[in-house]
Length: 116
Image (cartoon, helix red, strand yellow):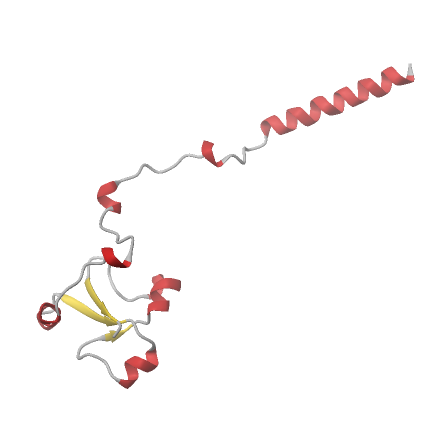
């Protein structure tokens, strides 16, 4: 009789454990909803350094002088202080990489960066 009681209690605990596991959220990431891939939004983001569009010095100068573009020196603040291009603003690259929300530029701005 005692063995039946232990088996009964064990069965109840096992069923309770299985029931609790069935209602817990899944840790399987394959079941999570994902945003649809939109190639129109994603395609203009450079994936590698070679994918970054280049501009000639004369075209960059003309764009900055006409107000069409903003010239950004991404070197260290000390390098900028030592010498920088006319009309350039200083935003070190690590700021772009670690604190993009503090960058005082708009997504719609034409930003021309340089580092040498």
